[in-house]
Image (cartoon, rainbow, N blue to C red):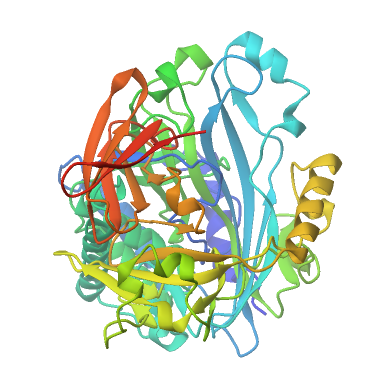
Length: 584
């Protein structure tokens, strides 16, 4: 096990003495360990902020920025980075994550900020543990009257669900530089030019993937600079880098253009460091209404300690205040603060504060409130239900060599539908391949029963009455016969079609998706004989869309989940009405 490195302690004490003698540009931080794996790609907080536009702000690197990055590289080069993992050891990290979302439960629209503590234990084979817990009570931003109504009710406000689960071995570390074995992590470049090349390759790969699979998403619209900084952040937090590789990352940052430098920035934990920044426009807050849905200007900050090469935090701060809810300019509306990391002997150990450093202490024992996902769907042999054969001619034709599910795709394992526990192997049919390479498959499966419930203490925000209702539904589902459903899944694209029972094929509960702002993409599975649909929305708005390969895809200038039409008319090839459907 590795405790805080003596050299790091010595340098931090010296830095503190220098600050007391009058140093003003950068302040010392509390002694912390180099931090590693905290995945930042998507905060697991309900309703994370969604970015609408991302672009670097230009400008050349200043001499002070180059000096700060060089000092950080020197600190890492002297061994102030992650020590090597011995067999059986785990790399432990702790971070605090927060996001701000719309909130109107107690009256007029307001904003609420919730925080989580995220702990991870990762071994050299990728196995380990992840634990998320609530970090204090949520904070409300609203009028004085709304804040007064909220006071005393904080504990009943919605919060991110806690969980604690073991992570099976994957053989590698996940990072924005790619999936790397521990040996590959140790072999990462120590030359700045080679590291910059790895960073740019990873950034370009991520950018192209987002533009291919989700071209309308805010992430796909980010500049390459944003993806480069994301790769930097991932390398410094997701990987136990050697001192040479960590130093190379900081030296490579000198050549990333389109960012600005701030010499003195305070992170959400009150620590001081330097920051590389970009400015963006963001969409309104998720679930924000009225003025709170208006796009806001923000600054993204990547904060690091120039003395030690430690990444302190990533935060998104408001450029302008929102007076209506008392949210000041400069407030971090979204952040991940990297608190501590180091080697431990088991996933039941962690670091805690002790005096001016940290010591190893027992962590909560093995997970008691696991939220491990359902087992993957299994391929089985069974006849295709007649109700689906009568509706979809593609299921009546013999299967060909292309009618099989791939085991994986370029972006990972094949996305089996989570709705089903089993799939009829002889039902798989390739419907179409788009010009962009997306492939749509139709298949039949059996819907999962309602999963067994964990103890009530593991379900944050559930009342006993709600828990008993869910328990009754689970018991009833165990008595019901298996339900066959038809699903469409897509690889290499970004559309979801869901799964339907025979009765639901005639419904208009189409799947809708967006990224926090209009337009929403509406998708549906339509039986044979329907060539076109006419959808009616509030205020008489109507949309006509063609049906191709039994698939319906169109966009409407609304935000999900309000994009499901009020009425739908199915039309045949000659324009005659096949069916008229009205939403219940």
